[in-house]
Image (cartoon, rainbow, N blue to C red):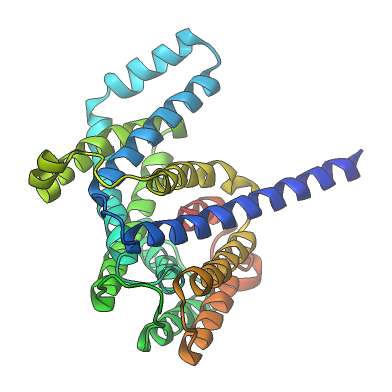
Amino acid sequence: MAAVRENVSLLFKLYCLTVMTLVAAAYTVALRYTRTTNTERYFSTTAVCITEVVKLFLSVGLLAKETGSLGRFKTSLSENVFGSPKELMKLSVPSLVYAVQNNMAFLALSNLDAAVYQVTYQLKIPCTALCTVLMLNRTLSKLQWISVFMLCGGVTLVQWKPAQATKVVVEQNPLLGFGAIAIAVLCSGFAGVYFEKVLKSSDTSLWVRNIQMYLSGIVVTLVGVYLSDGAEIKEKGFFYGYTHYVWFVIFLASVGGLYTSVVVKYTDNIMKGFSAAAAIVLSTIASVTLFGLQITLTFTLGTILVCVSIYLYGLPRQDTTSIQQGETASKERIIGV
């Protein structure tokens, strides 16, 4: 019987690993595709806004399932959401930061290949680690610091002479793309640590916190839509340029984040590191096939260095001799988001 439970657990972990990998790779490649085709380009700000709306509805549904009854569901919403303006304001901080991050992802993938983006975006790991040290007063082991510098070195190699995609005909600015990723990883690190701090400050449900954050997120992204593309949207329409591929990107963005927050407790850092490395490999294969990406020696060496550093960073704490054992779960949650 124990063996059966162990096998089920292993199968579930493999399922989690597979879904996390496919979602990460598919999102990056699909978004890149929608930004580089010759069709009318949609407004990325509207896609970010719709993603927040979808996440809100999904979180409401998951909260309803968690509470188990209509009465408890209404009570939870009235007490924790509509009756807590201070909490909504508190969650507006990560909402704003995540809105910037998501818009930067669109800008980055409009100017960089999906594989280059996937590798470079792993800078979120050292950025999150730094925010954890500064904001939560934690420490990193020597091996983790080494892996952080190794990862930065790998990203430098990848960006040294960015691989070119021969099948992409739209105008691109690699420097602008890298700048967008830099802003995105800074936002990811800060918002992830801030959100964890809010979660640990009370025993409020994760889905309540998500609802609070997505309500603020919708307001923030709508303001972004108006300020960035308001005039053009008034002329062409909110859903201008939308295709089924764009809706697929929105679906992946909506489900991916929520799914990760649910399954992360069933995985460990090694598994998530393997997932990130596998997503890089899949994105590279897709980029070569779809976009004609030309693999260079520096790209290959940098990618290998990044994958190895991700693995080293995720080694169990007892093997890396520094972070307290009780902090492992919360740290895993931040790095996985």
